Image (cartoon, rainbow, N blue to C red):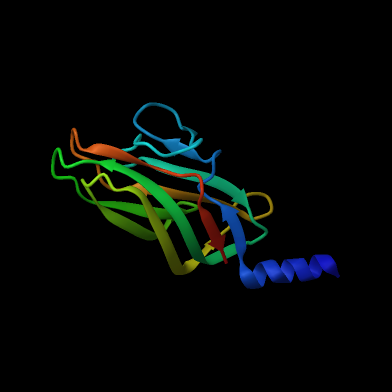
Length: 158
């Protein structure tokens, strides 16, 4: 009975995932994806750079996500950076986006997103695997600095 109640609780309230976390991968222009580690500092600045991770959740379909995370902005006014846009991607499907005005060396920027979207099916043998990624849609101008993520995020999938 405990297993049934736990499964019901997971389905009713969602699954909390630590994302991004130290072991989450980042893909920058400097080579193959590496672990985020302590994060912070600027290492990303090109369209297509991402932070991502894979999770087994027990959920075979997801249509809602609550996302809390922090970025570290080291863009500067050396050139017109403008608005930096990012897609939230779940199993290859864009489920939302976020942005901020670059060029101000803002340091820590908190994001708190609530997203509702068409159901996305899980992957893998049990059909409960999900890959979450935040993918840059802009390139910071030459000399305009860069950004990164902190490994203190929480993603709740339901």
